[in-house]
Length: 357
Image (cartoon, rainbow, N blue to C red; front, top):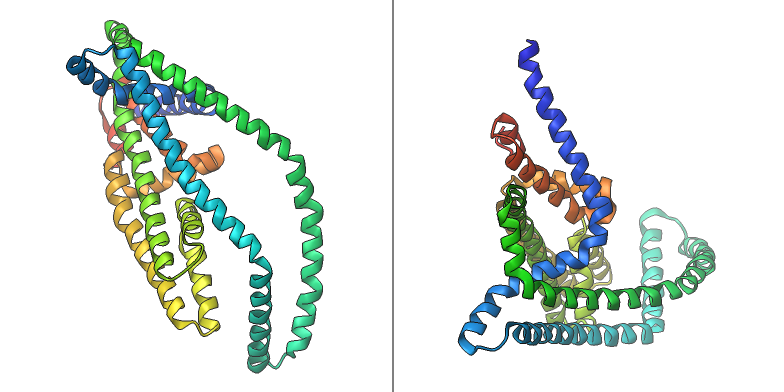
């Protein structure tokens, strides 16, 4: 019996040790090397293209790398500028029309109070008076806490922008250097056994983790596109702003598009806007179906693990890493699995990690 328990216990200790190492790496080392990992990813992505262009054009690889990287950054910058510009315009319009929306909200609230009076017998004036007494106090408390926090955090925002610009410069320079030395770096790693094992782990993690992150991005863009298109067809003046915001909410665990669309449709229904309520319900249904159909296929297959395991890893990641656990939870799982595969022979524990038991 002791011999039968010895191996499972040893395997459990090994897995816990690997999990601890992965946690320490992702928690403390990863933030320090993120710019260089991004540069390595870009170098790996662009290197085959650079080699092909170099063979056809005979232009120096360094010059080609610089030109392609500048073109990609310019295209990305244009997309971000176009989207950001329209978001700012819609935000300005929202703030400019805020008094009108406030007045509409007041009319809607009075109508709700009248309905409550007809249903419960509570006087509408009494209910409205209590709310009108409470709302100003809430607003004053918010101004007393939120505005000073925003003012005190303004320096942090400026500092953050400068840090972001610095990180982008580091990424750009590192990408150029890594593309230049990519072949030598790969050859140096392939010479030793440790380097070969590291390359095998990184390749498998890249295939699985890259697929997961790409899948999440595809799903978020698809949901945002559905929301923007639906709101635009509904005649919403803030279709881009609202659609992007709802898409971001959908990417967050335990939120989803229903957090926005269900209350929105109910409000329109109470106001007698039955067509808008129906449109918002249809948009919510289509966006939810798109996620339900895409997520198991894109995420589960890319990771090589059941969708339930994906959900568990995301939940555990959120508990350990905070909001970044959405990405770091599945990445931790992949690293633990691949390090185990590389370091130890395939056995029942490996089957357990793959969800086969």
